[in-house]
Every structure is written in C-alpha cells, then in structure tokens.
Image (tube, rainbow, N blue to C red; front, side, top):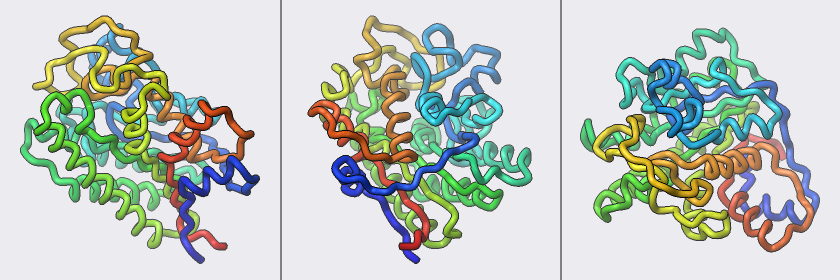
Length: 327
C-alpha cells in the first residue's frame, strides 16, 4: 500500500504513450468557499444588491460564469444554489468580512452536514477559501496562515466524517500579484509571503491527511497558484494583454464585495482580473479546465505547438493526491 502522486511529468507522459488513468463519473457537485465560487448566494441574501448588476454577471463576482460553473458543465452536471454553499466574503473560519450576518466556511460545512445525514460518496466536493483571511489584514491585523490552513483541514475532515470521498482542495494564487496589492512593492511582498506560506502549509497538511485517512478518500489538490503564475509569466499564450490591472476599479480601502466605484473601458477577454480581487470569466474558464483535467486526465493526440504549450501550462499546475493507492 502506498500513496501515489500523479505529477506533471506523469501527466505529460500520457500525451505520448497510452497510460491507464482512473477517472470517475460524479453524480453531483457540492461547493464551499468564498466569492471565487459563489454563484448567487450573496446576491440572494442581499436582494440583488451585491454584487451589483450589470457590472457583475447574474450574482457572480465576475463578468460571467465562474470556474465551478464551467467545471460542472464539463462534468455534465447541473450546479445550483442548493449545492453551492459558497458566500462572498467568507473566511475559512466563522467570519464573513463582507456582511457579518453571512456565513464563513465553517458554517457552510455545518449547514451541509446538518442537511445531509450522510454525504453522497459519489459526489465531488470542493473547498476553496483563504483569500478573505488575508484581506482581513485591513481590519483585524496580521493574518495567520497556520490558523487558516487548520480551518481548511477542519472543513475537510468534517466532510470526510459525513461520508464525502472525493474532495478537491484549491490553493491560492499569489495574492501579491493581484491588482489590489501589486501597486506597491511593500503590499505585494506582504501578500506574496502569506500566499506562499499558506500554499506550503496547505500542501503539507494534505500530505499528512493522505497518509492518515481511509484509502477510499481521494484528495484532489488543485494548484491554481501555478496556473496563475504561468499566465502572468506568458499572458499572450492565453490571449491576455493585461494581467496586472483590472477591468473595473473599486475603492481599495473596502472589502471585495462592495459596489465598484468606477468602470473603465476594456475588453474583458484580454484581462486576467475583472476587479481588484476577482478574475474575469475568461480566467475562470481556464481554472475550470484545470480542475477538469485533474479529474479526467486522459491521453490526447499529439497537439500543435500552441495547444501543446497550453496543455503543458495547465497540466503543469495540477497535482492529484490519492490516498494509499495499491500498486
């Protein structure tokens, strides 16, 4: 018995030789987190005020669909608010930096467990949170990555205890390269450090959990950080012309779910970021494709140079951890 890690090199080999890779068909998808995955919960809770239309698309914190919409579509599943527990402003704990009455990640998990005596073992579960823990620096002082990762571990083990078996955990992009931080080197370095500490600690925690949990629990670690670094390093490969600024401007002194103060003229398809925190729907689509490739890694025909570079960048951002797989 041993834990197998399917890494970049293994996946790239599948482009050359037919390797058998296990893939699973899910019968549902459940999502927990913050505004990066919220498809209308804050919008519903605020009677359509936040995020404001038409600047933001149909309750999404972007100019269109977000990554879980794209992933669900790729998997042939229907994603709705009954299965999406993510709220904009949620921290990994019990706080919400947008509206205090809205839930953090822990309440989301607790609400799901309370409503589901036993989690569907054939469903996919997604946890992506942490950004707001670090944005809370503007209000509550210096954040603590150890506490944030501990909260994520608690959320993960709670789902496992309820019966979840396939759980995707997403790390953070380099927040220091986000528009809200990159306009001063001091702020950029600050958020870069916490993003790095967060991702390193999260990876270590998932490695530990993969050794401790039952062999039928699959940890799917999605490396969005690597994907964003690749996009920012070579934006033209992805069709972007601006990976530094945002399409729309907001007051940087307030939380990321406020009403934007100004909209600028831009082609959102060429921008990585819609506002100072949230990606455009074009970027969300790339994240969705990344997630799908982690779940359905299959051999493909020899690609063209352009497609090959895209495949390399996407596959290079994926690492799939599977607990204690037998040789």
